[in-house]
Image (cartoon, rainbow, N blue to C red; front, side, top):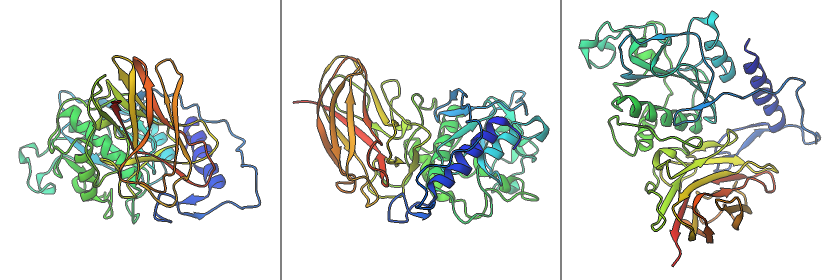
Length: 409
């Protein structure tokens, strides 16, 4: 790792984060926690690295809130269009992967890199430019005999490449990574009208089988394609314009409820954790990179939810919405319940003038898979928000899934 920002990220966000927090996996207690290796209980103060913190000053782009870090390894598509999405694995860590792809000495790149939890994405090359991520020309014999008229086309010119932290040989992938990648792919297919099927969303190893196997035998293709479809509203073909604004789309895949509606000053609407299900010109979800997407616990709304550990930190998940006029709204929240959730997590309402208009403390270990009344709160005209605070006793998890607002009777 020779990129200074990447070195700082690796030290602070991978090495010392693990030393301070331990190693955890999803599902250890039927939820999203399950610590399997914790730091020594005798050490009370966190270990602080003697290394500059990462600048993290990249601008956010696209509907997934990617951090922009430009790679010099790109070129013109020369009139070609993005018609395929190619799935890769880094064969290494996230910070080492994107820093190498951003290094001119590597001679390679990708459009995006997804970290191992799905909490962060780097965009290295604009989608309208050619990234250098696959050394193969199209051969329909490697793609079930589909579109043989393309034979010989250089795949870099006709595709968008997504790298994923990890290895083709690993036995499983985190739900957060799979969901975040699915949302990213959904947005790409919408922007470029790419069919959402197994012939146009393909693995690197499928099109370059002589020396590549990524993303590997254990990439969950069926689940992945289902999540892409869910993120795009259930459709199988590309369409115009991905959702944007205010941070990433949320959650995981699988079976949930319905999607959100459009904001109006006189009708009910839902703000989903998945921004692809929101009309982001009127309402959206905004979270920091400390939250990760999951669908590990059943009973979630739509495609999944955001989850983060509880601790004394100001890092709320915000459900933003724009009102034409002020008034009273019944506020409800949906979450999947599990034993590792917080027994006392706080929801807050803030109006367009940044004044608190209501709060409710709930137990997310119970009442999952349904709408839960938080209160009747009065919001003003303009941008308001309902927030889920992480600030409570540590050792549990906060879950931000969906919020529903209905005009008061």
